[in-house]
Length: 173
Image (tube, rainbow, N blue to C red):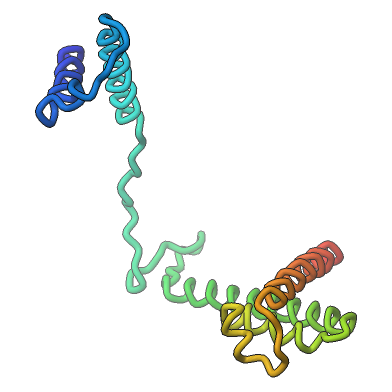
């Protein structure tokens, strides 16, 4: 039964759209059509195998919502999902605050080492915090810089920031 299904699928591919696959086929030799049919059959079989082995996600049996309690620890306390979410959000905010402090510390160190450090800080803050493009940053700056120079500064600062943050994290480990 499956072999017949595969043969039928190959046939449908070949006669699909008024036999256009067969009309487009240009073989060099008289028996080239057999190779074409073989290739088509192999592709159909491989596609069928791929579909058969594709894994589907199992349905989610545990239906949690903010209003439904989640079974808690061994003391059978019920912890409301909203409390868990608030805790996770607070942790994320704390990590973001710590990361911003790391960035500011690294920016301070970088600014101290550069002749035009204040410009570097301003460009990086426009890029990082406000998400401005180099063209918009150029419009905001008091000092006239070319777009390529602004791009170079952003790249330099990003590289320096990555190195600085990596060094800080190595020290903290």
